[in-house]
Image 1 (cartoon, rainbow, N blue to C red):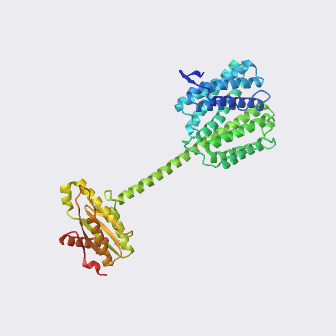
Image 2: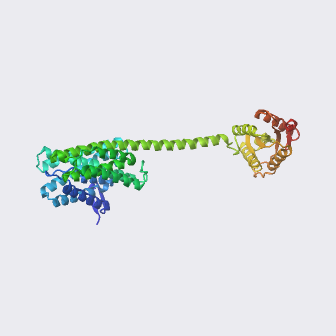
Image 3: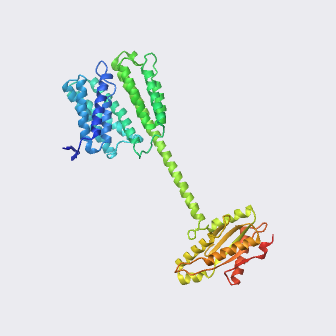
Length: 478
């Protein structure tokens, strides 16, 4: 039978989710491990990672599953406390405080983020998570102190700092790892698995070398390693690096090793280590968020640049192409002619559709546009690969024909004329013909002069009865 629970006033139904079991198991292992490995002689620990695990699970889980995760964590907390030798009354008190603290943190985060998990690549959201954990830790420390009747400022401060560090260190690591596994991750890790393993392994080795000896006060070394890991791996590296330092440092310090043992006072050593971890965390996470923000801005700029380049390419193509016929535009064909004149002998052919005004008047401008497209297709299908064609304006077209041999130039113009004449019109289109004027460049010719002579030849073709090719005699003087 499916379970049901109340969440935010809404009854949700569903079976026990595997994630709830995972939350309970992870909470149990983290809690029991912390109590067995990091508690000092006074019963105080360095960090409480179980709280970070629960907060991350609640932030990632769907709201309807929140009660299941809280119940799993509560059971795990009770079992872990009892196995560690904590009395039943204190186990219940500590469990209640931890559950309340997680609920407060998640409630604040969901209020600020509109039910979305905090994004560790956004500096503002990192700050909000820190503020939420501070509020939750203060409330839970107050509740645990009151219920357990500890009535000690040392107990209150130890609880407050321990659970704060647990949430501020572990929660960002889990949230970052979860975010990076999603397809819509804004700043994915673009490092190889070998590099990630090498960097985190280096972080672990440095931490072990620093906290595994009690001779040299070299606590600055993990900070240098943390900067390198943060710079290369971003928010994930920042959170993972702090977790590694916190885990190794806490265990080694609790066992009497590390550069803090000369303090001889276990409480002072614990407090110093907690302050050290807090300093490491507050420097690494904001730096990682800023680096991630930079990478996101760089990515956005790159995308914008590529989009601008595509837009510019399309704009240039649109400016160089006549949208009706698909041939080169007037601007483009004139630029091609200037380039052709600078490279060697060239001829031009200026052609005009015969009686085109009558086509528009009798059939309409839409039919006239289709006729122009048909003429353009016929021209494009006739020219050689070295030739160029463009719409010069209205019903006029300009052809650029490399080479200056009279017979070859006239033969090409004649083939174009026949191709247009033979083009098959649609049922509602009239057949059309063209008149062509040809001119070959002479030394020192400009594009304007060459086109002017071709225009004179075209006028001669019109006078000769249209549907023919004419050339200016001067154009064949070499």
